[in-house]
Image 1 (cartoon, helix red, strand yellow):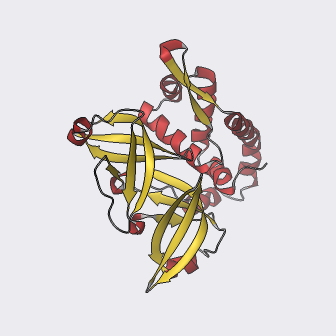
Image 2: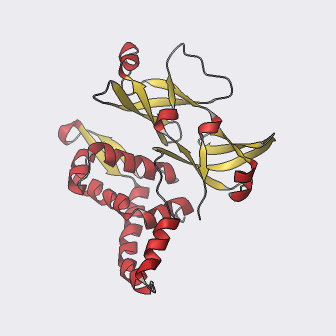
Length: 254
């Protein structure tokens, strides 16, 4: 089975993130892998979340036991992706030699932009419905989960969206609202069940919460620390997340 197009293109654009898989395989811990890669623990998990969300199956799995009471390891799919990356490294020199001039590489870099959106979810267009000047796009994320995006009709045409199109849904962490027991979801919003994986406290009184969806994909959200404390939010707690369809940005492979 070949890798999804979106993940394959990510490998080509962001080799340093794939290289992180090698450190995970060698170190057996996200903390030690981040140190070996010269990045923060948070940056390492951001990279792994992005890779897991773009892949058809999680590439990195948490493990229990061992030194420090737990760690992380590559899944079978992660090991396969790592082998692919190692083969791509062997081709890198040939690609550089094939460029007719140095400006060619700069051009390619401009055409393949990075994004500031923390959350990137891969999905398949399962529905298209016109609503005035906008189109409501339904996305099947896998595992029975579905979200909607509200974009202009021009955007639908420019992205050449159709049923079955594979897209990446981009969502900033600040646009994701975490709901506890008794909190009502707003009408018209996407609302998904999620499980808390980790809570990272910031000095400014806010916290970042990493949440796992039922299909293996993850979301990050910024939440007030007092809200978390009042509800005793901790890893393993089941919550809900919501975000408006107009906050969902869509991207397609180029």
